[in-house]
Image (tube, rainbow, N blue to C red; front, side, top):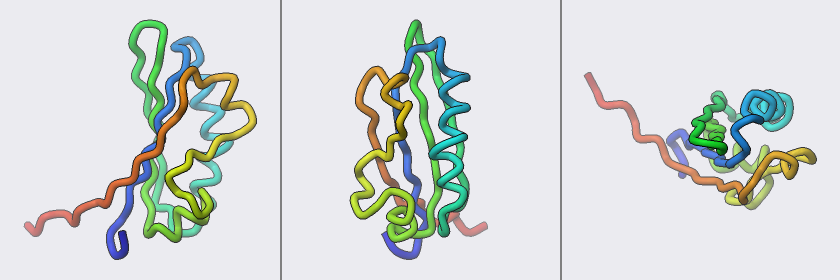
Length: 106
């Protein structure tokens, strides 16, 4: 994964009524840590509600695997969870990484 940006996508599912509250919690915990970690190029939180459930996505961009390790530790495939996450998450969260292809030349 060297030489290209890496997208880290965390996915969690919560009850729909907790979307705003949980997104604020993410910004106060993991989102803040992302931005303080060297090699982070930005982080965004997204939600999609369907019925009584909501899917939450935290997308972050990184310079390298080593930069992600600075946030997540040596096992970057393991979700980083915080003390209150268990109150919101109604199924196990997941992590996926993608190499970002260079933009096409004009």
